[in-house]
Length: 56
Image (tube, rainbow, N blue to C red; front, side):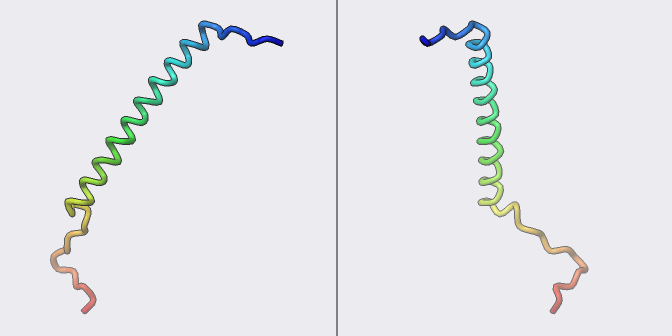
């Protein structure tokens, strides 16, 4: 049984899947980068609430 030539439809699907995968990877990288910047700047820390005792 020899190797079969890939159909043109599968080639188009592969190209589309690679494109969607790259867009998804870029989106994840942007979200991860924003999270790292936000946490490293200290914006993620909770602010003390006025009028709420801290238990002491």
